[in-house]
Length: 393
Image 1 (cartoon, helix red, strand yellow):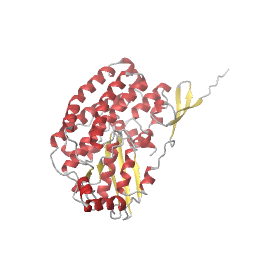
Image 2: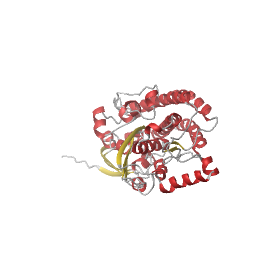
Image 3: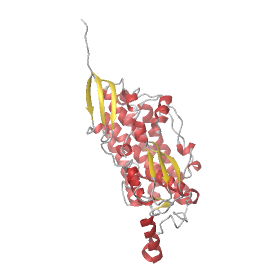
Image 4: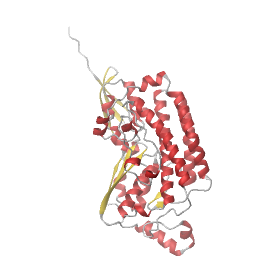
């Protein structure tokens, strides 16, 4: 007598903690084997791109903090670089401002990867690592607060430079942190890399070849974990990255293990870049000398009527780039973050389109998960390191 089997369709999320936000997965299961996985998004939609069209270029900047809220300064950097390219003032940015941007972008990369490792390990069952990663992350958050006044939504960069210079004494804290960070990574590896349970949960799980990764649009550590040697900081440099000496970690295993090792190596490399940036940091201006675009120094706003009027006009009326369109992509912690801006000659973006790495990386989830066990899905979501604010922007 012939036997028949039926698959079961279940929802995972959008309230499940392992989906890392309001992500709903519709799963078709044959026992515990995933036959089909369909991501459903849209529960968090914020309309950031449309909101930007009703604000001046300066006023749209805080919206970018809320994209990948674990890497706000990376979002700020991509946006201001795009606006500066639209204005044609890229070469006007002072050297000190460029170095500080690199410095903060790499601290942000470390901070973002620490949250990834903490939550990824916790999802799979390794609880101790979470505490250690957040211990180090807290130091970066304290520096964020000293520099920008906020721990998450930093809003520190400005079109033309920075909102303020680094506070006194912060460079010493940064140097100590970057010097110590590689040892902390060694400790995380001591807890995880040789652990047989950890190895069984991630080796050979979520495999995707380099060709498939390119076809589906993967970028960042997820792409480099599939053997594709591509990093915008080196291959299409911005903010002076061509002047820094760093390696681009690449692994050929194409699985969750490879992406785990790539991100750990990236923390080590980011620490090297931070130390190099601190060595390059010299006194100097932090804003370009473009009065129609850059806000005046705060002391001028407070003490002179001219400064107050200048500030008021830029904030209330904005500046007007020539009609045109630009695209700028940067190497954010999760992959390529791109801003496409269209100007019609007015003070507001005519169109803004964001290329968020989390959304493009999420496309690979069905390909990685189908044919695997349900428990593997948790590891695969973690290895993609998604943030739903980046997806439902």
